[in-house]
Length: 239
Image (cartoon, rainbow, N blue to C red; front, side, top):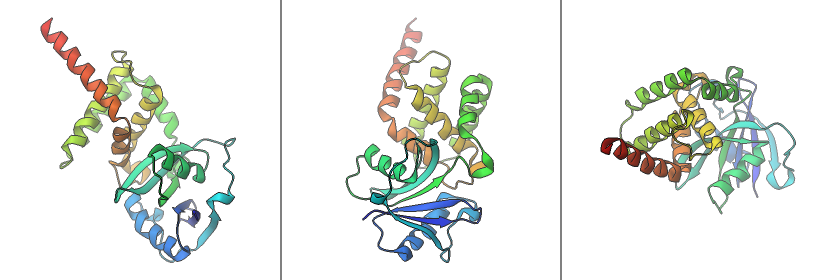
């Protein structure tokens, strides 16, 4: 049975462990293990002694699709590796169901889910993304900072190459040079760049999580862009 276990953090916010979990003690162990991997700020860590504030069966909860679309930061295991990403949904149970459907996961998984939008310094990520889309100078500064930071990361060259191509793709999309990418994906890429560049603002410890997640999710778009850009460069050279 899929169960949601809720924990109260020192900040007063709540964080949830969702999955086929035997009991609250197992949930506490999982939460205390995962939270330090998700957040640099120890105020957002689940201590082993924290009381469980909610235990509910996922099947007993009706999803609320008429509420406010919220931003969630999620950690989950896939292929024996801990993955991180951000998702927009109406509820914790909606996030869990979306996670399974998006990645085609048939088996029940364990996920730690945290609502971002009302958490760190009341930082409005949606407003920030809109401002960067509308202000080309701000966007240039963001992509410059991202590239500088990426140069200091080693050991995942293939991923870095795709992320750099993804950054180029967004720049070309916003300047009108490239059109074959969905607006929602551009929105998600910019959001991931903000999380990556301004990690400390969110207290998130896995700074590459959101970038790796979105680049893996849109691999086909990145390959299509790479083919387009190589043809475009060849045309310029031949001209």
